[in-house]
Length: 248
Image (cartoon, rainbow, N blue to C red):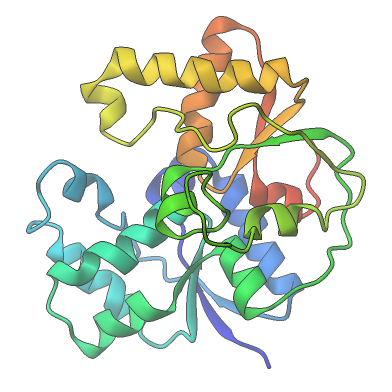
């Protein structure tokens, strides 16, 4: 079955990392999706909600719902933004459009795993990779198993990554520790945020990682800034680029 998929590209990806959006588009098209990109889309409203302006964000929520109302699914390369839509659009009036958006909005990896149910990828990435498991995707959406949970959780991130030929996934010392970005937390608590980020980078260095990947480019942006400033550390690459077969 060919789905009509609305491509949701977070604002920071659109502005700073367009290659992630392009990789997401190509990956969906490779798997027989009819991709629709509403050019009027804006920020999902998460930064406003994080700073106590959730009521002001309602107009954004309503616009997003209207733009994607005719799509079978809405897919974006950001568990953080997708989780915000699912969890926090509850403050808006629950119109049919809002309910449709919340019920059918998926992170890219989740969509590949749960909806398309892919079992192989005809791509190669011959590098040692460290997977940074961002907090919203890990604990909010359970795209992998948090270390504190006793119940079994399908390891969607790692399962999909293992479909890539020639990849080596490193066993990190602290597999699910926060990078310290946290959106506006990085501004309000700069010193703590930087220290947490440095600790995450060092874990990857200690385990001889060549490339740090994640489902959230926001986390990677934070780690990339630290790596550039300390002039030491792996390269960064969004998981969509790896799954699409892009090279470093």
